[in-house]
Length: 582
Image (cartoon, rainbow, N blue to C red; front, side, top):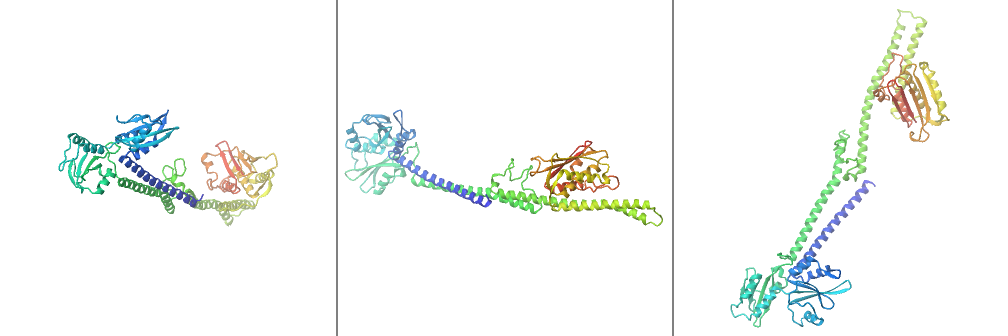
């Protein structure tokens, strides 16, 4: 998947995720408001909202009704009582039931209580619920404190024309419950009161009485009123307490405001968090890449944040960190670009070093034979001496030998630089390799320089016909044999092996291995490590050992150009083995 597609998919996923969280916040706010409203309603009158919730949570275990403990406790703290009645009218479960409530109901008697045809000291609320094939009747009764006090006041007799006489027992009840008593005239103005604080008005309108009756929790007092025949009105205010102990209920406005503030705060936190997350997730890699490009422009080819050999974009196991994976292709391209620029810089340095080596080497390698040629030419030119024909021939042979060496050196230099500049190999030809290698060996040993060489050849048992670049293969073998002969004593045994390459050793089917071994002086590790470097050995035209110093470098370049490989093994005093796999 391309970076463009990954970005589209990632942004769509993130937007869907943020939208989902927003919907969850909205849903949570709505749920909070609904729950808060239900609690308010339950606190105002448990018989409405609270009993409905209690009925929904009731269950049966072993034929017994089990109620939610919290809701049941709230029902009892609201001043009510609860009975579960079966089909026969028998009370099978009872909670907080006063002594004046029956434990058995006759069908007609129950209906009379329910419809009000027969006096009952409590207001009744009825629910019928079916559980496990049986029908149960849940009866909730409640008698408010303000109505009880009002009934007692009315039972004490009508108030006087001025200050009413309130019995001591009623005053004690009012004090104990924190209730307030008021007597109003026909216009709603207070005539007398008891325990009235400043927060309770002294004048009422019709609307004031209705609102206090309907929304008692807003005012903190539940009000009950009763008008007398002469137009005066008794009002009793009893403190409202919620089903929660010692907690006055909030209003609908407070519930909605809390939900709105919570929703706004949640949205703010979500959006700010999403902004920081987006900046960290998508911005950090971009800043990292820009810093990387800036480093590249300054010629620094390492990734920013590299510490202890590990880049800042990768974990300990080498994998990209999560926030960088979206830009995996870009990071990989940056790594390739850094590697390519670093390689180019190294290649430029190598080219400069090669140029310096070439200048130094060519100066040395050409100056020595050129000095010999000039010396002998100067000797032949000198008129003071008369040289014999034999001496002249000896001088000419030396001059020719030095000139041949210079020509070989120039040819090797030309070839190695052509190979360095990716010169294409010649066309491959079908060749029987056993015979071809045999002829190459004969060509080497027939050279006067290598007349003393002891070379043996072990061909492949069967005919080995392959398509090869003959000139390149001949040059590889000539250089390997020349190196083995020139740098070992005359008695050194040199063996050449030709074998089919096993499948795992060749880069393609039909490969073959050419190996040159000797039991000569060998090499130490330092020399072996630089065997294929140009000019490592240098050249020497002063002794019996001659060569351009480029033979092994050319062999390696030719092997690589043909898609193969070359490797050497050696130990001091135990000889050397060079293996070419093509």
